[in-house]
Image (cartoon, rainbow, N blue to C red; front, side, top):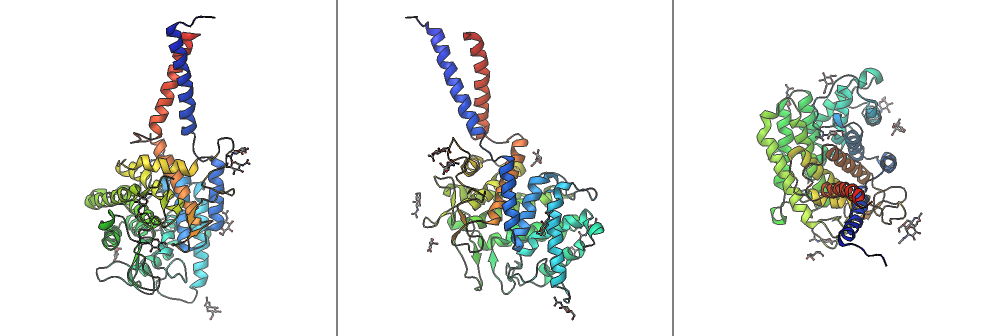
Length: 433
Ligand SMILES: *[C@@H]1O[C@H](CO)[C@@H](O)[C@H](O)[C@H]1NC(C)=O
Ligand SMILES: *[C@@H]1O[C@H](CO)[C@@H](O)[C@H](O)[C@H]1NC(C)=O
Ligand SMILES: *[C@@H]1O[C@H](CO)[C@@H](O)[C@H](O)[C@H]1NC(C)=O
Ligand SMILES: *[C@@H]1O[C@H](CO)[C@@H](O)[C@H](O)[C@H]1NC(C)=O
Ligand SMILES: *[C@@H]1O[C@H](CO)[C@@H](O)[C@H](O)[C@H]1NC(C)=O
Ligand SMILES: *[C@@H]1O[C@H](CO)[C@@H](O)[C@H](O)[C@H]1NC(C)=O
Ligand SMILES: *[C@@H]1O[C@H](CO)[C@@H](O)[C@H](O)[C@H]1NC(C)=O
Ligand SMILES: *[C@@H]1O[C@H](CO)[C@@H](O)[C@H](O)[C@H]1NC(C)=O
Ligand SMILES: *[C@@H]1O[C@H](CO)[C@@H](O)[C@H](O)[C@H]1NC(C)=O
C-alpha cells in the first residue's frame, strides 16, 4: 500500500476543493439568458404589445437593450445626435410610424390637441410612446417617411397640459373622464415631459416632470407601509386600489430613474441638483420598502405585503431593472444582492440536464405573471412582463459592462472566488504533477 505523504495529501485535497469551487462558481456565473432566448422574449413582446402603454414600454425596452446610447438611462448625452441613427432603432421607429399613421386616420376630422393614441380611457398611457416619437422627430425620420412626428408630440404635450383634469394642487389625472391617480402614471408621463423639456431646451417643462412625480408621491407614497406606493386613489370609474401593487411600485421607480437620467445627461444638470437628489431618494425609498417583502422564491407577490396574493415575476423583473439602474445612476447598491437573487431565479434552468427555465414557458413567456389587463388576478402571456425582462437584461448588461459596481455579495464575489480558484489550480497542478 503506497504511503501518502501529508503535504501531498493536503495538496490533492486543496486541488479537489478548487476544482469543485471553480465549477460551482462558473455554473452560477453562467446563469443568464442566451441571445436566442432574449430574442424569443422580444418576439413574444412584439406579437403581444397592442395597448398604448404596451407599445410605449416596448419602445423603451428595445431602446435600452438594442441602442443604449439613445436611452436616457445609459449615461450618454441627451439630446442624442440628430443624424445617422443606428439601424438598431428601426424597430422603435416602426412602432412610432405605425402609431402615428393610425393616429392620423383616427383624428382626420378633429381639431385641437390630441393624444398619440385615440379612444384611450387613460390620459397617461398614450404619452408613454412620446419619448420614442420625440426621438423619431429628432433624428429626422419624418424627412424620409413624411410623418409629422414633431406635430404629434406637440399635440400630445398640449393635450396633457391643457385638456386633462387635475387635482387642486396640479397632479395631472391618469384618466380622461375624471381625476384619478395611478402609480403607473410615473412611467408614462414624466419621462415624456422631461425628454420634451431637454430637447426643446425648456427647463420649466423639466421642472413640471419633477413636479408631477413629487405630487404623485405625496398622494400614493404610503409611510405606514414603509414608503411603498398605493396603486390607485380618488375617482370611481375604476374602483380605487389602495393596495401596494408591486408592478405599480416598479412603474414608479423605473419612471423616476428615467426622469433623473434625462436631467443628469442634459446640458443643465446643475440647475436641478435638489430635484435629482429627491428623485434618487424616492427610488431608494421604494426599493428599500419593497425588497424586504421579497419571498423565499425570490419573487414579489402581486401586492407586495398581501400574503393572499400570488407570486408575480413581472414586477420582480421591473424592480430588478430599477435596482441595477439605481446602482449605475446613483451608486446606491443596497438592494443589488436582492435584485441579483431575483434575476437569477427568473433566468435559471430548473433542471441542470436540460435548458428549460423555471420562470418561462416553452415559448419564452414569463411566468407566473399578473394579468396585464386586470391587475388583481393572475394571467399569462403578458406583453409588459416581456418588456420588463428586456429592461432587466439591458440594465443588468449595462451594469456588468460597467464593472458590476457595488456587487459586494452577488456574482462579483463568486466570480472572484472562481478566478482565485483557477489561479490556485494552476499553481497546485504545477506543484503536484
Ligand atoms: C412594423 O410594424 C408592423 C405593425 O405592428 C408589423 O406588422 C411589421 O411586421 C413591423 N415591421 C418590422 C420590420 O418590424
Ligand atoms: C372625416 O370626414 C370625412 C368627410 O366628411 C368622412 O368621409 C370620414 O369618414 C371622416 N373620418 C373620420 C375618422 O371620422
Ligand atoms: C424636432 O426635431 C428638430 C431637430 O431635428 C428640432 O429642431 C425640433 O425642435 C424637434 N421638435 C420637437 C417637438 O421636439
Ligand atoms: C415651456 O413649457 C411650458 C409648459 O410647461 C410652456 O408653457 C412654455 O410656453 C414653454 N416655453 C417655451 C419657451 O416654449
Ligand atoms: C389581499 O388580497 C386579497 C386577494 O386579492 C384581497 O381580497 C384582500 O382584500 C387583500 N387585503 C388587503 C389588506 O388589501
Ligand atoms: C406573510 O408571510 C410572511 C412569510 O411567510 C410572514 O413572515 C408574514 O408574517 C406573513 N404576513 C401576514 C400578514 O400573514
Ligand atoms: C426539462 O426539465 C423540465 C423540468 O424538470 C421538464 O419539465 C421538461 O420536460 C424537461 N424537458 C425535456 C426536453 O426533457
Ligand atoms: C431533467 O431533464 C432530463 C433531460 O431532459 C429529464 O430526463 C429529467 O427527467 C428531468 N428531471 C426532472 C427532475 O424533471
Ligand atoms: C452604457 O451602455 C454600454 C453598452 O451596453 C455599457 O458598456 C455601459 O456600461 C453603459 N453605461 C451605463 C452608465 O449604463
